[in-house]
Image 1: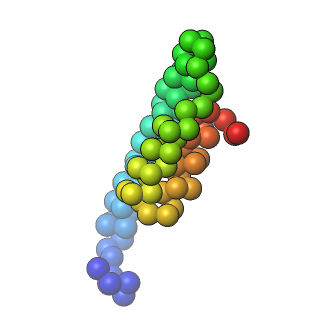
Image 2 (image 1 turned 180 degrees about the vertical axis):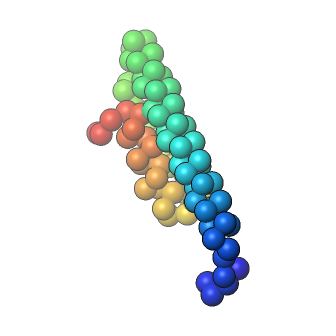
Image 3 (image 1 turned 90 degrees about the vertical axis):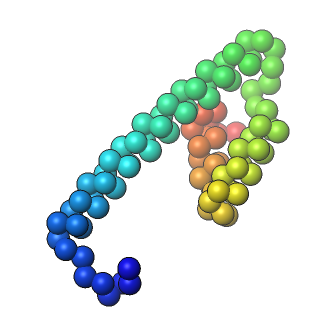
Length: 87
C-alpha cells in the first residue's frame, strides 16, 4: 500500500483496535517476563549463584538483534532491565 492510498474509516478504526489489542498483549507479556526473570534471579542467588549471567544476557541481546536489527539491542536492554533492574 502506498502512502497516498486511501483507507476507509472503518478499516482505520479496525487497525487501531488491533494495535490496542497488540499493545495490551505486549504489556502483559512484558510484565510476565519480568516476573519470571526476577524469580530466576532469586533462585540463582539462593543457590549461591551470581545476580547476572553475562553469557545468557549476551545471547538474549544477540537474539533480539538478529530478529529486529540494531533497534533490537535497545529493546533487549529494556527487557533485561525490567527483569533484573538497572546495573
